[in-house]
Length: 150
Image (cartoon, rainbow, N blue to C red; front, top):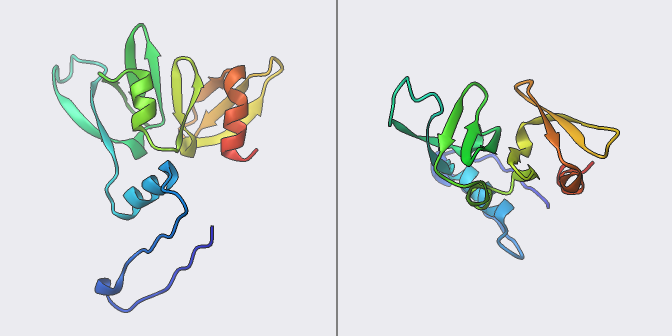
């Protein structure tokens, strides 16, 4: 895709003109980003002792990964863990094209991946920007490599 950046003299002149063959999820995400209209999902603190019943709207750009454990879905950010009422498959549909399923129980934000490393058994290990390491199942490695361009 060709990108043209032109400097203008006033805020009134600022605009983005996007010409596409098809409006894909990537294009929708770019438009959301340009409009500062980041998507968000409803979550609550995983440790309910702090503020029981309190819900938050969490921007999807802050999510490192989501995980399903014992029929509960957790959302992980750089520093915190939240619980959400969404099922993992629902989150996978809601989240933008920057997210990818990497196992039956996990969806990861590929923009938060620092590095990936192949393992002997066909799986991969991904290190996230916060230093956390996650395992990518064999059946999802091909999709991850394609998405990352590796």
